[in-house]
Amino acid sequence: MTITSKDNETIKHIKKLKEKKYRDEYSEFIIEGIRMIEEALIENANIKSVIICDDCKSARCNFKRINV
Image (cartoon, rainbow, N blue to C red; front, side):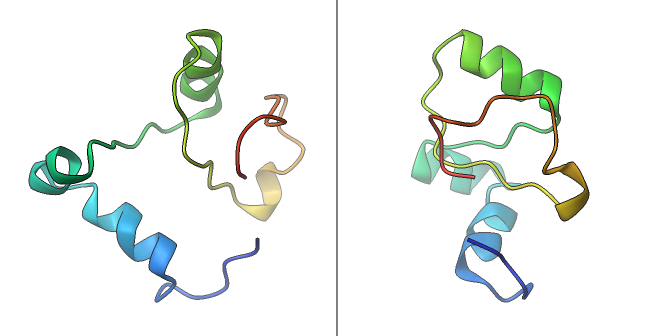
């Protein structure tokens, strides 16, 4: 899926996760950076989705088992 608007519901949800009360409410949190994603994959973390910019589509991280 391509996100073209800052008013996208996914983006709104992610922005909410910057606040602890929403992280607690949804039992979700944000990790940033390819290295952190790679570590989460190694640990078999339950990753809901990965949001990347167009410039990062060729990143070395293997996203085959998660929603990008």
